[in-house]
Length: 79
Image (cartoon, rainbow, N blue to C red; front, top):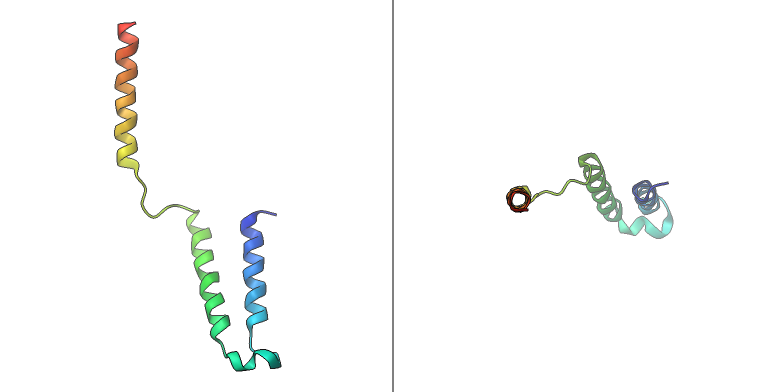
């Protein structure tokens, strides 16, 4: 079982436990369930997105890789 699957089950368990169906939690209202549902939605969006970062630094990496390629070519030519 992966960590992501375990996290999903834990969040779902918390959502069920936080429902105001038991006497001790009726005074809480739906706030705990709402908060946990928001966390569940955020988790699902994160899982669907494939853990991709919002801002990738590809431009700098491309330039750095191109510079290394040029340096390797020059070094191979000189040797």
